[in-house]
Amino acid sequence: MDFEFKKNTLDGSYRVVFSSGHEAIGHWLIEEINTNTAKLDSVLQQIGAQRNINQEWRLLGQDWSLFLEQNEVHITSNHLLSLEDEASIYKEERDDDLSAYNEESESWCGIEDFEQVLHSWRAFVA
View: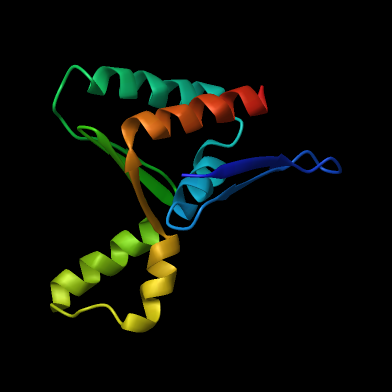
């Protein structure tokens, strides 16, 4: 997984670019964490705790949600979650037209890789 962090020198805003298939991680970082180091530390603490237990942990955000499951991280758009709920209610399949959107709205990665991203992000925004 490749990524690059950028800071706008004019307004101080942050931007991240992730390799294909991992774009949702960047969206989650910017929209749900940004410079909130307390929230970031809470996620890092939970990752450490996950090594000792085999339970799923969720962090439901305003626009993006994070799921820790054993050795895997899943980040998904809350909009995509609502589409899945609607599809299960009506037993419909999602349109193929939405597949590109879905790929940018959902990412999976290993927990160690994700932890490294979070440490790198924390160092970058500090």
